[in-house]
Amino acid sequence: MDGLGIAANVIAVVELSVKVASICLQYSKGVKNASDDIVRVTQELNNLKVTAEGASRLLEGPYGAKLETSHQLLGAVKAAESRLERLEADLQPRSTRKAMSRLGLRALKWPFQSKDVEKIVQEIARCTHTISTGLQVDQTYVAEIPPTLPSQAN
Image (cartoon, rainbow, N blue to C red; front, side, top):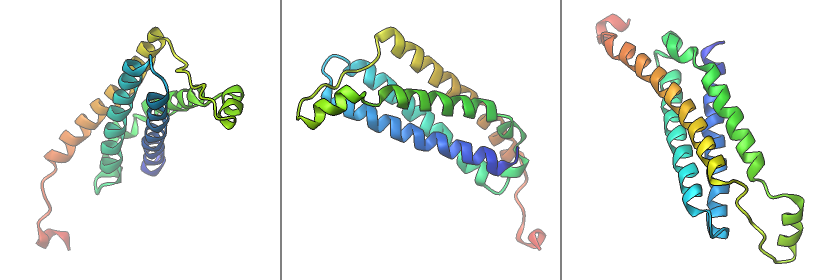
């Protein structure tokens, strides 16, 4: 897959991270007993977002096409994207809650138990770690490239 393909997937991960974190924020305002779990998920989503943004900058930079390790991270990026899509779907209010909210009743309930949250956090952290490790390898490669002098650029 070319650099643009993986870059597009990385951007999708960034956007999904923001979207799911926004949904978690809504839950944190409307749910009383799950605030610690919501904070843990939101923190891990932010870690993934920051890492994916770094990957995006690196892939879209001047050496993006030469970053072999980052190009091989498509599996981790797609796993993160898939996990975020499932998480987003799980967090969407069900039709019963939508109907109750139209009536002005608040029926927002955090859909996960603590053990589920632990699994979600671990899955997101695993994706973040894999992407981060690939970034470190490629950043080392970029750091070893000698700078081009203006006379050599022509």
